Amino acid sequence: MERRTFVKNTGLLAGALWLNKTDLFAKSPGRVINIGIIGCGDRGKGIMRVIDEFPEKYNIVAICDVLDMRLTQAQKYAKNHQYSQYKDHRALLENKEIDAVIVAVPLHLHYPVAVDVLKAGKHLYLEKTMTYNIDQAMDLVKLAESRPKQIVQIGHQYRYSPLYYRVKEMISKGYLGKVSQVDCRWDRNANWRRPVPEPSLERQINWRMYKEYSGGLVAELLSHQIDFINWAFDTHPAEFLATGGIDVFKDGRETFDNVQVMLRYPDQNMVGNFGATCGNSRDGYLFKIKGTKGTVSLLTDKGMFYPEKVQQKEKGVVDGVTGATKITWDKDGGTPILPDATKDGTWYALNDFYDKVSTGTLPDSNIYTGAKTAICVHLANQALYNNEIVRWKKEYLVLDHDIKQKHS
Image 1 (tube, rainbow, N blue to C red):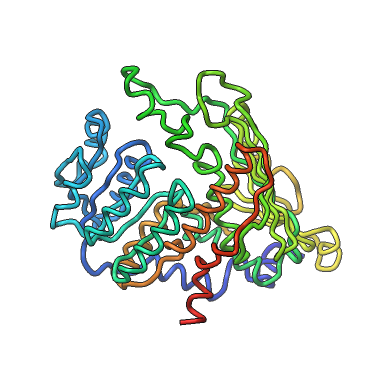
Image 2: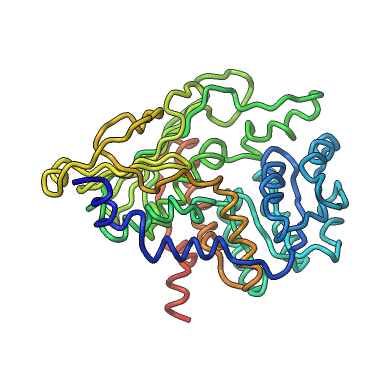
């Protein structure tokens, strides 16, 4: 069977869902939203760069960081905006011009800063992972519920990518058959450290290295893939097993540089394997979802579908992929999920944040889903650092927004 026939029959590249999402992304703006940005590190500066692609939607009117050097670095990223700068986020929140705030601070500060933003009456875009621990996640849900007119979006961008949205559709329509295994990696060959101009700033700059401030590789990298599985299958893991260690960089860090997490989803009869290392970059980013009818193999911006051999025999052979350079692209017999690479996920997330603030509707990545994934990250780290099997608790089900809607 030719690829165009495969595409037509499966609806992978055409269909109402894709058209609807395209219409959403192209929606004309109503008014410009004034943005304050708290946290001008690597992530904060990256968000500023993306915001510059939406001059008709966003205007940066304030930036904040506790470090002078971060504020200086941020100047070139906010150069197209007239903004005030602050070292205290509470002073920024007193700025009456600000409609919404983006929070990109170290993980241990997510909760206290988010609380201040909501109490100041601003809309909130909070970077992942939503909170440092479970109690903070539950408390932030309650606070957000008490302010229903304020939009809270969490920075799990896969929920906005056309590629990952399409994969979710493929799963729900049964293209993969019965999925029993998910295999994920996010590897690098680097120590993950940032330069420190003076020793007193070590923990402020390299906060990811220390347990007091960070959720380590699980929070910073694997949380994206964990969140997507929660979303795509409308599920959450019930059992958490993990192992790891400081196996590569013996430099005084506390968070592991080599981790492997195994999650069991009994409601789906599925196992998820999530791993990351700082000691090898060969695989880089891998995300494979394996079913009885086929496998989805994803990068952040491209994806392939590989039908099982029995499916090929029944429906004909899908032609191979040419020009492949990634390890997940080097096997024949697959076809692209979308015809072109997608944009950076932050672009889609910020575009949708504008729409949700403008319309007052619940984001796909919201306070409930963000809390659920934050709890997953915390339980995975508990299993990892305590060397124990950890289980989901029934009281966390209050975070299931679909259940809330059914009973409201």
